[in-house]
Length: 463
Image (cartoon, rainbow, N blue to C red; front, side, top):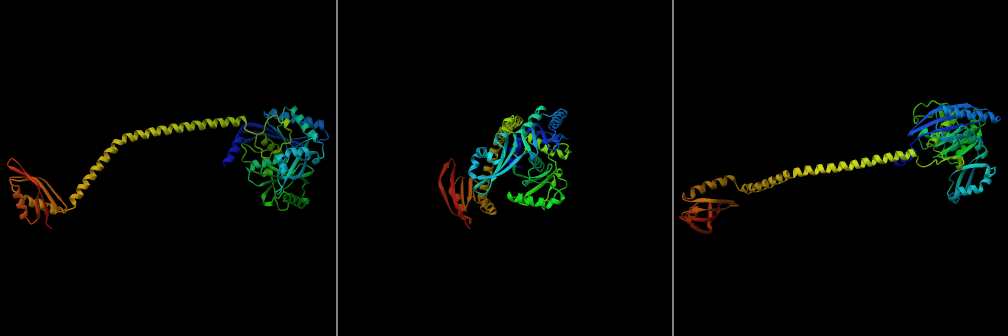
């Protein structure tokens, strides 16, 4: 997971419940969805039959009773609810506009809306998405719902004390369900949705609804025609067949759609849900709506007027802010503890260094002494050990018994001697008679001390 994905995921962390409501021409599906931080579970689902639209009073009463009973039985928090309506109730239009219109697109559409839909502006509510169309133009997908339809279902839900924050379509809810289960695999999501007499073909890319078109309802005899129509839809939106994953819902069988292939949404893995995942296939749009209610939606479509939403859908929730606050406190505590540990470690190291310094000084003194001794050894070893021994023996024999040496130095074939004798000249005479010494001379004048003379001699060793 990248850093951006983590931040996006953190923004959705929450402790909330949501109610998903899907109304089809013949049934009502309800889903109670719960999110605990990052874990999402479906607590309960229900699919109930609805009377036909030709019986509005009985249909409305059945609708209200079913929602009220479901909310009470499952203790649903209805403050976050999402309503999904059939595609057949909505009107779509595709508009190509100059690129400059993207700077104030909402104002442009508001000005042109009555030229784009077959109803007065004050009788509809709309939403839109757009994408680049070449270098100089944009393509706008306009989605509209009659305000009469919106008001009808809002009034029915209000009787059950449910006030939705969002209204979307079945294909949008199913796309959000597919995106959640597939964990955003990066492919274009294609949906084949059969809600009755016609089949909806929808394409969703990166959380944006690209298109929603009605085609003849699928049957085995029209599979080839359906495939050609889908191929045309893909071509119009510059989507290659290998870039899209088709999912089908409410379709009898699994249409091949001329090689594009599709799979039932019920086969999609549900591993991202916590707990049991056995719910009716007809409840999938309600589950998708519930995902949007708990801030797990991925398609930005909302056909509910902003004045009816009752609160902001975006931004950080209170639970998220609390989680961020707790995380901030933990990070602060961790940072302070790290600084304290570093300071304690620094003090411990300084104490160890202070205890070791005397030993280090002693080692350095010993090293200096060893170096000095090694220097003396080198001086002594520069001559021949046996030669020095012979020299000492001969000096012992040559020097008279009434004389003695106080110092003797042998270095580089030169001998210096200091000592005392009754006659210093007798020492020179004795050394000159030896074949081992030559150029024997006093290195300093002799001095007398009592009956002794103090002398300093120097001589060279004969080769």
